[in-house]
Image (cartoon, rainbow, N blue to C red; front, side, top):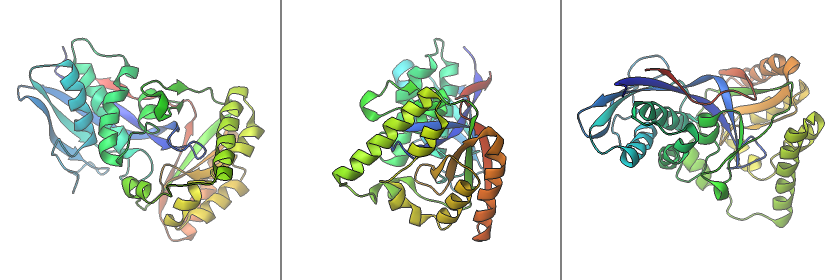
Length: 314
């Protein structure tokens, strides 16, 4: 059995616009790390949490009852081990309340690291229920659209009715994701509570049609069908007003040739899907539109087959 191990879990695009609580997409180049070290103290503890600057995080708690990483890790530990414990060190690489799956990345990295310490580690897909325990604490609900892609990579269909089963979807060739993060924050749990509880039959049918069409487009490698179906007529209109630069950034992305553009999760981050050849230009256009509103930002361009969580050392 290993004594110490570090795992990385990527950020993610929740909902992917068209699939509220049912679709998620992993991102490359940004994520959280968690180091786990065996301890004689029972259960899961947290030694420290460090922020994007590498310094001790100014307000994230080291209370193991208040961290998605430790809650997820404790769920796994309780199910698999009866003695000793683990001490975690959490290194945040995903901005908080960013719509990039920050809480999910910590939960996934936590279970990946602790799993690697086990005498008989579980298969990666088997870790999903434990990671979801951490995400449930942060978001106030059971949904896997950030946890599943962060754990498994790629584009994942993960409706609650199928959990713990998920479906890794095929992705069209020559298409990338573009993720823009404005320096703003949106609390996911609060954003969920503010959503309407009732929708018209016409809205429901339209959104179900777009989701079915999008999944079919991915399977058929049909870029024009993706352009036609990557739409959100139910959730985006309710959440867009919380992101001051939303209209300008979306318009800039579409004008630059994006196949579609919407919020990532509850925002404030926004994503676009684009032909590989256009992705960098679209990222630049989105950044420019954001900064013209006086809001600083950063962006990432990622493959649609970005890998999921990985054990890095140990």
